[in-house]
Image (tube, rainbow, N blue to C red):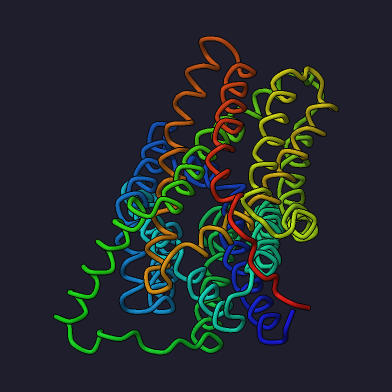
Length: 420
């Protein structure tokens, strides 16, 4: 890649990896943390429902806000709400404060969704006008699962190391170590963004009235673009289909694996598979570069192939009855999934307007969450009434049928690859 593109890719990858590393610190203990504070499982479920509801409600408006006042400003605001959530979690001794923490966490997630992604994609387009974004997006995408994996591994170790020290000095419980460490890294991320990321002021934000009018225009035209632009709408439907299918696998793989194991097998396999999931996703991101090149950088073709492959792997997963074969097919599924992320992102960003990019990325995320919500419901229903394997067969059908949505894009001409 050319030097400007390489520098932006490395900066974007580090920034995104740092962000998800901080989030990963809480993943292994987020439920245990709440139970330790005396909450019931029902209250834990309510907290997650509030978090998801806040994200759904604010996803699109915050994308429009990022396009209006600036992606960096909105991202910094997300870090402030992340810090507020951490303070609530540290101070909480009962349900109301924990609930407030999850509400703040939902605001933070909505504000961060698509904001810095849009910033770095704009920077890449400026550095290499007309060139294909797939390769730099693939390289940046590698840092996300790697950051999550590193954060999750450290998050699993903190309650056993720093946690007892915090209890000894009267600073919360053992899981407060995760919250305190996540707070520290969130503050560092905020400072890093302030000092290193530079963004020119967005036009039309000098006066409040002009800013509000600009927000309305961007927000409404962004939604209209998603439904009126045929190519964008097809891509949104593929995102919806992916959410419908993948939710069942993410929700049900643990009980499926448990059914293969004997009572004295232990739970190490769950940790190994979770780590393998992140590693396979990162490797898939890297492998997408030669795969796209092999297919002539025609990303529609790449996505048709990968969706069909994923559908086939879902069928194999539904039929397997041993932990060894399940592990192979499970990791291959997320290898294919990681390979699909950057070609889809390159197609999507090629077909949207730069001045509404954050709004459109938020719309894409909204379709993903909607698909995931419906997918979780049907997968649980089918698994309970028939079997887990049956729910994955439905997921396979969705993936294979949705591959046809990429065919009109597969027939388009390729874009120039970012040069070495």
